[in-house]
Image (tube, rainbow over all chains, first blue to last red; front, side, top):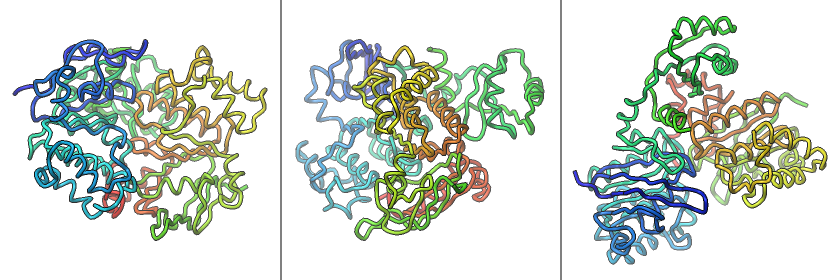
Length: 305
Length: 247
């Protein structure tokens, strides 16, 4: 498989702040590549460099074989970019926005309608409404249609699902899967939601301008070293304090209705259970559990501290 | 005063022919952590604006901290705290200046501000950064500071609008520990979130669909009612029926 995006030691500084620290990675043609991490990790700086909107301070990158600094004009023709902030024209109608983006790329809505059809059809009945008056979900669909209308080779989606409810997020990812599967479009997408990793072919976990790990979601889970346990008792609130106070418990984090913990070597589960019961806990349940990407992210943060 | 921090009865807001919030009725107990969930466009923000005294109900009524949101909006504002991910602090003021500004707005005395500021900063481990511009703080610290500031004037109720959006998983959990501390101090917490694991951390949760509250109970009871294992599944079962918002 060939690489359609290649980054070599990309760096970016803002004053004394290192936004990106020598990032290197490759994205294969036709894959969904997720860049997952919190706000301020460097996701937007990376996207802006790859979309030729920001100059790197060090390193280089190519998109579809073209250098992001020297060949920026040509790259812009070949990519679609959906920035994190809504960036369409609020006082143009839905249709006018799509028309506008088609025409500045020298094409027509008709020529590439097949690409956007699935998505655009959902908002077509509002085609005369001003983009500024659309709901959040509709804006997102229009922005994706506008980023696609010139049939780009690569789509760059910067936090398309931030602030979106879980049901709409699932629908959005299903649209991306279809674009990849049916039209072979390569998609780079960033998100702060760890659970969205499952929708990507490969992911990079980013924090403080560095990739902490890069692999398939399954590969990342597989390389998680500690044994993870899920714990609950009738006194959940006190349980977290008691777990943290016990020096044989290495990490303890809340995860929905249970706590996920890792233990020091030499502590058996019956011992832990006994300890917690001595602390006054009833109905203590301790079960082994497979880590999620979020567990992996926290473990990696812990290692790099 | 009653045992409730918030009482809403048939609270409704219409914009033209569109009913954003449609006759919602619920109570929030004092000291409770109340999760206010719903799909985008379900009417959460509109409801929250009415409860904060920022928007007049078209119909129905609500009291917050014992004050009527329509007739006593100013009293409501004095007795609540508010924080969202979008607006929290002034980036180009220092940590200390932000504290003085918000304390002053809420009518705290200089002595009171000074005393509480010292306490707050040492609690958060920010004492050495009191002269730092807020814009230079890492996002996680900023959010924790913003929350502490939203309860700086010791309000009866704090409204948190997606307070943990975009923060890293460790900070997100630390943030919830601050929420628990506030609730332990007797502050009622009204919180919206799109993280379904956070719904589990609430005492009770309501889920809005198309302007109405479709479910309201403890997380464990909701899961039981829907015969599912997670709050995500409860949310999914309700929100996928939504006719608006998704469009």
